[in-house]
Amino acid sequence: MAARAAALLAAILLGALGAARRADAAIGVNWGTVSSHRAPPGVVVDLMRANRISKVKLFDADPGVLRALAGSGIQVMVGVTNGELASIAGSQAAADAWVAQNVSRYVGRGGVDIRYIAVGNEPFLTSYQGQFESYIIPAMANIQQSLVKANLASYVKLVVPCNADAYESASVPSQGVFRAELTQIMTQLAAFLSSSGAPFIVNIYPFLSLYQNSDFPQDYAFFEGSTHPLVDGPNVYYNAFDGNFDTLVSALGKIGYGNLPIAIGEIGWPTEGAPSANLTAARAFNQGLINRITSNKGTPLRPGVPPADVYLFSLLDEEQKSILPGNFERHWGIFSFDGQAKYPLNLGLGNSVLKNAKEVPYLPSRWCVANPARNLDSVSDHMKLACSMADCTTLYYGGSCYGIGQKGNVSYAFNSYYQQQKQDPNSCDFGGLGMITYLDPSLGECRFLVGVDDNKSSSAASCGTGCCGVCCGLWVLAFWVFMYLRMMGLA
Image (cartoon, rainbow, N blue to C red; front, side, top):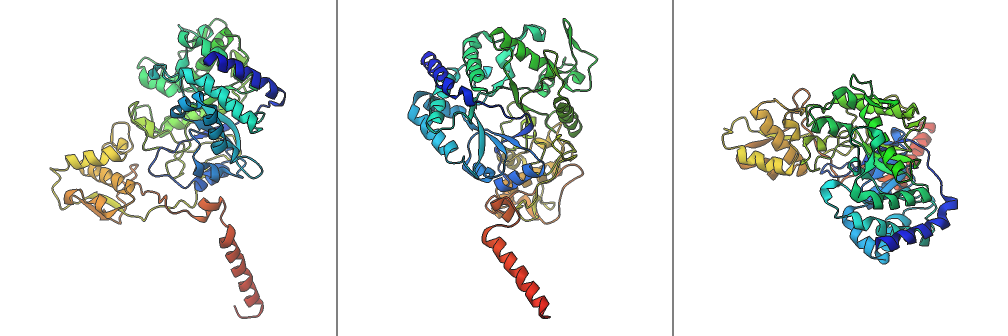
């Protein structure tokens, strides 16, 4: 099936080749939504526009998110989830339906500027043990045929975001090769990308290299130079990003596609959840990365040629993500869950610092804390319940709330659950051990959050502006009535 699909894919692409075009390089962001505190999509879109972010990568094709992006001018990458690959690979009708529902209905004048469809997310990850590999090329062939039918094939490009574990090197970047079991499919993928004018997308995480290897030189993870540079013949590598990037360049070269454009699908640094995850490190890494990319220096194997695009991971924190890799998984955002900047960062897009989200529909200012009049000896099971549902990762070593004491820990856990349950009074009972307070219990850098009311949207959330529709009309009418009365001396 994969061989026939590859042949069909090549034939389809020949018709679209002449119209293929490459988007301008830029710093974009990943927008994930694995959170129980989701700011309205309109607020998030306004946040991106305020920060002049012109490219966003999604992990699915959420209708509410896409509706909010309509008319924003932001270039969008939508995603086919790994769970959808099998059905799309096995059925042209399923591919047609997916494109119709998630792409065609949104594009057009005043619609969503969808530029890419990500076919799967890191489908070649070693831990998946090959379960998605056979679906990729057939799924791409079917989706490409669907785009041709919809007259979108010359505009919307297919890509496959790959984890950096798809390639490897014995010691230096020039020895980079794809994993042996991936050589054939990577050759087919590279051929398709080259024909369509789409980049090879890779996710690179120097943080994980540092986190997983105690011998990894810390300064090599950043961009300020290293006392442990990697020497590869005439080339010297002073940071992990350049070394990893050029390992991929070498791997592509060995299958005949050494000049294929490369985009960075995910890269970033978490702000807590591990000893090396903190605000200072996150700012240093992300600012160093942005400065490196915007300088157009490129890498030793591609001097003067920066990545086609770079999507920071991530725009917002996602407190419902799995913590199997580590507690840091919930803290990658350059903004907190509610769109408030965590640290100063110049994205190189025109603003010297990040601008915060506006019109966030918070729940009322109240919190759930441990009742000071009650003995907490029996609190253990209640804390386990709260933290199994809500996020308590900030309480652990490497977190901003680590070391606030037992009562502080209990109160934080109780409040996290209470806010996740949208401040349902019953969710603050905990067998009589909890109580609701209107005094902010935050302690120093430990912030006790107030959740977002995702059932309520402000005018900004609904319209992407401060005034729209009937609401705007009423304000304009009221203004002119006031001016008339003032002219008549009645106001």
